[in-house]
Image 1 (cartoon, rainbow, N blue to C red):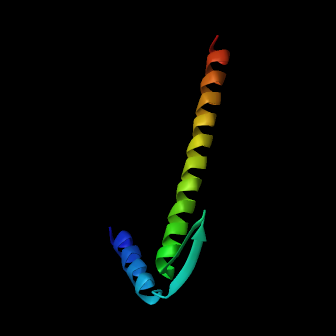
Image 2: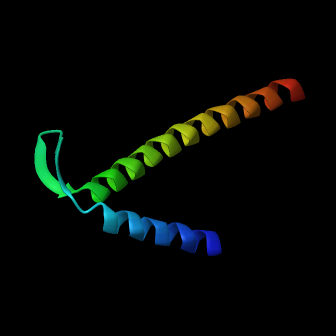
Length: 74
């Protein structure tokens, strides 16, 4: 709980210190957003991609292990 609170406080400080507007262009969209928000969105998007890739790999390994147990069990 304390570690989570510390990370939250650091995130708030990061947002306060990085309020400069930056131009962001992505897939035909164009606009100005605070730097901290742009970085947060990029980090969350990257985390989602990594989590999806990891989840897919875990499912592949489970299927392989299940097939291996079935063939060695007979």
